[in-house]
View (cartoon, rainbow, N blue to C red):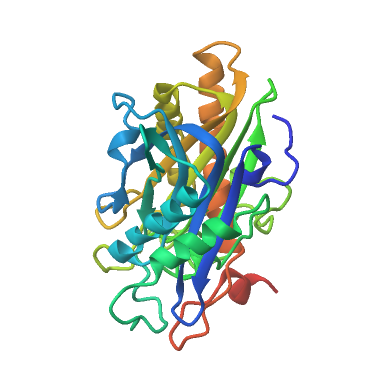
Length: 333
């Protein structure tokens, strides 16, 4: 496995990342914008998902190319963010053409951050449509991490969550990257300590280099939960420069879900809405269809685990009374 240039999803050519949000509100939106329509699919494992246009990502459905993915805070209100991204794309002349009509295809998913602090009294209409437009407008080849965009109000059971990313390359030179908005019902760290569940997959001390603890205790393995229904969700986008079919993208999404189990404890609960979106942007065909896709899916699981850990490692606490501390606040020194 070769190293990648920036260890971010933006190591995949053909996509840009944009974040928008309001620190006073304590919530925001992240967009993954594709230069050209991308072959895409999805896998949903959480028991309480909130999503838009995921049905068309089923391999049996007609639409082959999508224009963007949207991840947003705001619970169901955040589904409006995709409309803002659509508006921006339409202004650029992007979308699925039906005679004279143009319809940008923008699947999205939301996480619950309404209890993380901040002023949610936004008036008649929530701000997420504007966040979506602004995030698309600001999308760039760079990728900020931590408490930005959809990660602004994200939390895990004991720490501030946020946006994380990682990437890797197969022996054949195919790159896969992940972007995660980490708002899990469970824990990303082991017990009350600084060690990440994803430590065996860490590269170059990207989330502190602490490894695993010398031994595990019963306390480390006990059940921890936010204890609030529908108050969680980790959202992930996986992208690759491989040339894949829609069905292969779906299998990549299924395999990438293993990264959740490597990084979050417990995972895929009835309280989470865990979703993995996948997109194939490249023109590099797989050397062969079975083992090469299996290796790509294995690495996808690894980069998802690493991106989830980085989302917590890079986060900063919200400036509100009662807000959860960040990993850096508790363990950074």
